[in-house]
Length: 257
Image (cartoon, rainbow, N blue to C red; front, side, top):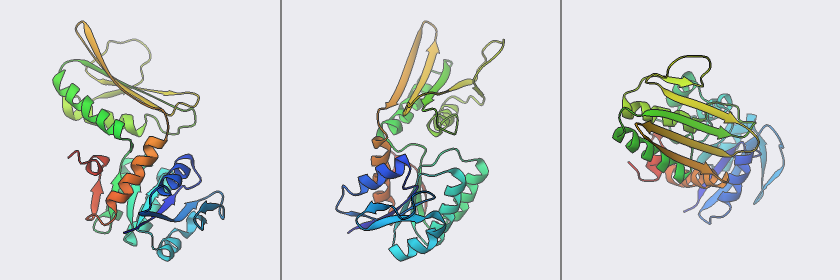
């Protein structure tokens, strides 16, 4: 059975990798692509880029079952609303949402569609999150620092992956405070330190450092290519098609919970 997939942000770096990845599988079909740029440009297999304003019409006409969205927070919130109203399942890889935007998406999805929402779709990062949770529970009382690095054009800081790491670490340790960067004088407290680097064309590096008496442990993930994210997003699209309505994480796709 073929799963019909549409891609929002199809002219972006991730969108292009995702459309190429879809084409590798006989049981997946790219039926639509959306962007604010390159409208009318071919995406392959007779599909051309549609204007983002035509989302509802094209999703209906194409028979899309899943919409993969890697765009911007404001665009994604609206795309989720439109797709969920049509019963189209979702894979969301956009990061940088406010709490209000997350709530709006959740209300749109509830009872209407299935959605995988994750700040990172690579298998390695999802294992990274599990490993730092184990370490945090095992190394109670150790200082914790989160350091992430991305390319100079990334808009949100800290990254969605780092923000999820902080959430996991808070839950595992009971620490409630995170300090984002440090400047001036003052002793370190019991906070989780968070630091963002923006430089060059770094795709994505994440390190969590645990430091205690006489030792330190570092758990690190480095992305060498965005292909890891594209492959995971397409895997999530295959999994979410026809799943019960609700919001899922990549851990569900990978069978990790």
